[in-house]
Image 1 (cartoon, rainbow, N blue to C red):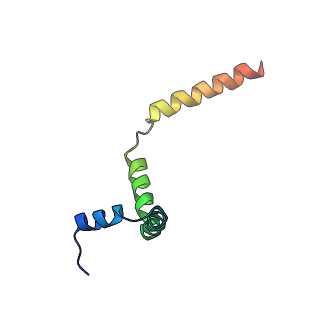
Image 2 (cartoon, rainbow, N blue to C red):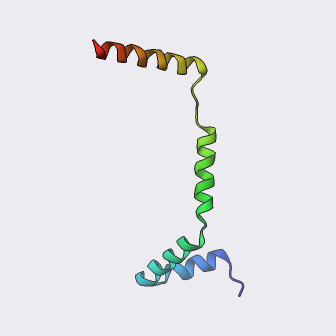
Image 3 (cartoon, rainbow, N blue to C red):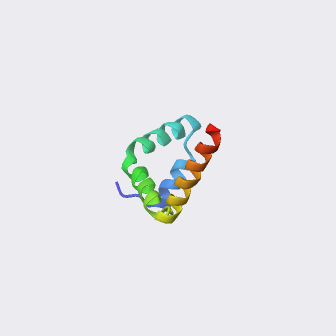
Length: 71
């Protein structure tokens, strides 16, 4: 069966609420989780990272705080 996207949308709009809920559940099952995982992976790969200098500053601050807390 060949149906255009616009026709499909119009048909969906005419479904009763119970059938819309079933349709939504079915669509959710057919979309692979890999797509969401891939989006998250891309987000993480593009996220900013600390430089070595920033990591050193954080480590020094942590050491100072630990020393101060022991006094």
